[in-house]
Length: 285
Image (cartoon, rainbow, N blue to C red; front, side, top):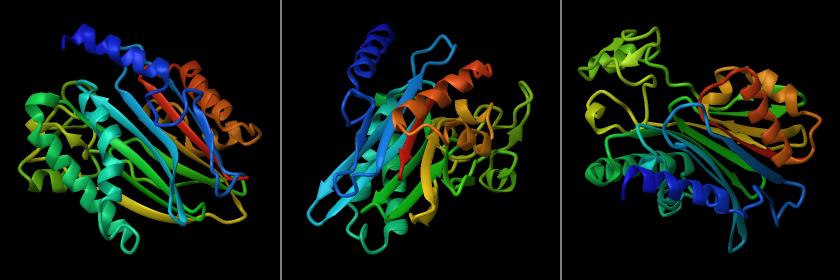
């Protein structure tokens, strides 16, 4: 398929709601805990390439359990890798036999397996890569967040924003990158990059950098209690222009999750963010 054909197909998918496994309305709610709702919104950046962000936002019913599956995949050098992640990463996580007993380790293994498969399919998927932030809500009570790259997750409790993910910046991981034989350079431009190319220290794919780039996720567990108000997942297009607390304050009075996500993306755009902007909001009360 040509680049033009892929871009057209992506636009058709986005318009039809296939950026998510949920309905095309961009919102949904838990059947187990009906007060838990979610919504998402995406805005394409000002770059000349096609939209490279993909989201997942859905509740999955299982025997005696319910999982909320939320993710943002922010691609670079093409959208084939983030699209692959949207289709496969959660399946790989849930296929881990130890998911229910050793959830954090199961997620780490699934991230590693998925990255290995992406590298094996480099001819098909291209030379690009993707960051990822995933959040799994187990029975409305336990939240497990994992990430590679600079897409971010935060939770708001009693009006206070708490970041649950880790921004994997090359300047912070210079030693481990150099230990793998790579280097961090601010040239060209003024942003630290792995081998002068990639502005994140961890990502899926990027076959040309695989020796120097990690796909090991940071994993955090957070319990949902009566003080928990909402969860925000956002691509770096949001966080480049807005702090965690600013984002939380901006939507604290917006009860509809989709409207809250849309408000954040539009606020980032008004602050001159030029990147693709994706946002998911999960409201708990």
